[in-house]
Image (cartoon, rainbow, N blue to C red; front, side, top):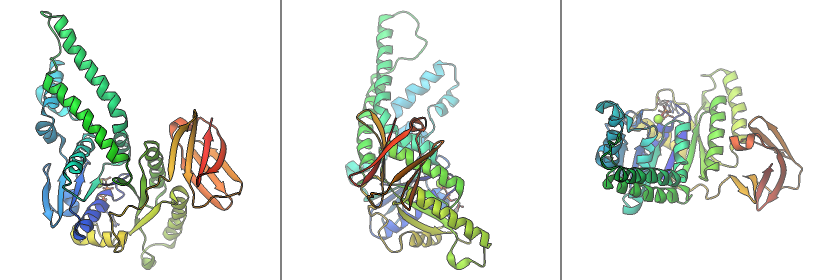
Length: 384
Ligand SMILES: Nc1ncnc2c1ncn2[C@@H]1O[C@H](COP(=O)(O)OP(=O)(O)OP(=O)(O)O)[C@@H](O)[C@H]1O
Ligand SMILES: [Mg+2]
């Protein structure tokens, strides 16, 4: 599974579509899934798509996840109960159906598809196009917290049933959860466990961050990188899209190129030693298969887009023996002096000539970085 994520408008959908086309062409049984409720995969591929899996070429299927459709078909019991519940609270039936859909459910539904594909072995490669960062990040962390939520929910509904039995004759203001509903909830919980295993295993899941050489995009992507690392996902590579081509220097002002080289340095300091894939600013919109193939060629240059670029996490944020630590993979181990400089939520690490800039998660912003040492090929920074 290849998950492309990143800030709005950086090219996630285009890169996902290009990757899927290339994988299918290489003979992999491929599916590309759009999990952004503002679907644009169909526009990008210039092919009509829907909430049902559809074949759109040799070895290539596609789907734009539609949560209302998912609720009606796969999660009928849950959808029905939630909707009855909301009607009982005074909502009219039409809006109550809409209300059972909460932000990010597309991605969650897609994760259940993944679990199914894993079980049936239907595809070799699953490419996932996601909504802009913040929402996706919250959801990718979901399998981690899902257990806790499901347990709580299950208990609440079970207790409702008990309470109802104890108060027979009295009027209940909320509908009773049915056994079928409780079963569905239980099943969701079990499936989420499998999803978690798939997501956290770098041999099965590759998270790729898409960005453009622009300051605000880089900053948001750094934050995404930090949170993905915090949730234990392995970010495998970054995709730098919309680079100004070297051969078009007469088309753009010199200052643009200078700006770009500053941003490239920022990218280097923020993401090295992650593998970097590059694509260039096209003169027109990247729409349709031909344009997407060109994009794929730039990105992968004849190599396999489904290859695992790295099995190692280049950043890890964990609590070790009661102490919060941030471990960074650096391209060397060094006896040089390590210097740490913290400014608000950014930590700058310098080792000799080498400089890394990391956005800290909220939990570490208020803490002091008091120790840094090389351990097992990593620079481990301790916070107190
Ligand atoms: N390398 C490129 N050169 C020129 N145009 C590009 C390039 N990559 C993407 N685009 C164009 O930029 C626009 C946004 O791209 P795309 O929809 O892939 O981004 P996105 O990250 O999926 O956006 P959203 O966050 O809205 O989902 C599209 O019109 C697309 O054709
Ligand atoms: Mg998109």
